Image (cartoon, rainbow, N blue to C red; front, side):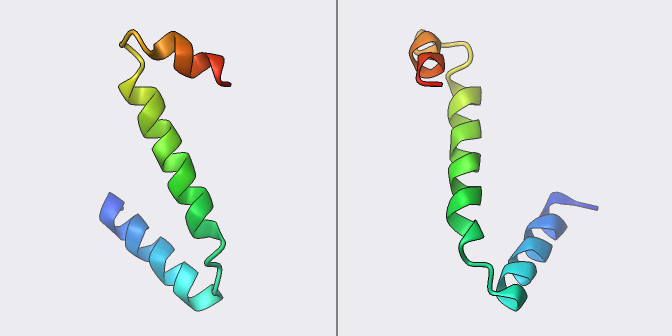
Length: 52
């Protein structure tokens, strides 16, 4: 199963079940994950981890 298939399947689920409130939660979690990964080896890491 490819990543594209999962994204398409999730999109179809949102459209059919009218679960639009899930979109902001998923976007926030993705952005948070990207932020943590990108700042892992930088000088900003101690400040990012202090927020949590």
